[in-house]
Image (cartoon, rainbow, N blue to C red):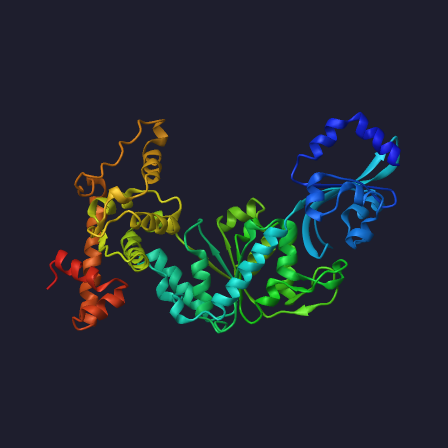
Length: 482
């Protein structure tokens, strides 16, 4: 066999040179599961040289057998395996891999098998650290951490209806499906529902299904048993770690249909089994999930199974985009200004009129999250003398997006002039004046109402409105409220 391999290497030297330059680990074994070749990436990962591994079995080195080694499974079954996740222990380190395995046939006879493996150990460590962080920081979530219903900021009728639904959902234990564009606030809604539910004393754990490779997601959700491979550790999955609390499955529409079917079984039976074990484990977890695709579109495009949709969407809250509730921009901007004033030790009172007019016309493809990041960016450029955020402080990319949105349908347009940091602010352009005036009038009415409710106490009114006392005094003078 060794002679035959040398002949192949001599015949195709460039092929093995290529294998040694790729980041993925490559392993080749003979009919008896004895290693014939590993590339440089595999040597670096496992700490063994090609010469040290030659002729030794996969079981001897890695503690894997025909059940737990994808390469040996491909060898014995004579069938290819795709996107298989597995773990092994080598030199005291636990390695997590995703691989493809293939049997090899030469001249019609089985020669051996090979695997091409991607190391995802670091990704698993990051995921586990994130889960530990969530358990430490948000279990249980306290009122002081800002996840009450009041943290859902907005007065637009569509948004207020979502808040009402969230309050009702918090009083039950039914599954909730949150739908809305990326950045619209789905996770904030999930946390608020949990915080105001009977499960608030239990953990709240969130996982983004789109960020985890399919082959890892099952082990993260359901856990693994000791028997899955030699030296493996018993690991609890998220269903067990969220016991008595809430598990938030973000972007459920990114989960494969096969994984969705397994999730459906858990929802129906309230039981899970670790990978590598047949033992059923009872779980008590509330599921809140989200999709960034509208329900019917997600079903028709087969992003979500129809049967699991109806199981997950017992309560379906459809969160509007920021473009659909632009009248809330003023409230949201003031809230974020207040947050970043405290973080950056600034004293900004508000947006200037030109910025507000610009914000009311802007399409906000990134929704509330983009608005928050925009305010944070601006707060990095205001000076101690500034009292309001002007266009000079905004990130430049906003003007490119706005320009594309306004002129995209007409073809390319000339680039926008750079922002002059010395020019004076201008009032909103005429096309936005109507909405601008309505928002100003609405804010004035809210301030008057709050002042009356608090018998004119400015400090209490500012707290109720979620703004700094100085900001409220500025608005009282601006609107000539007496």
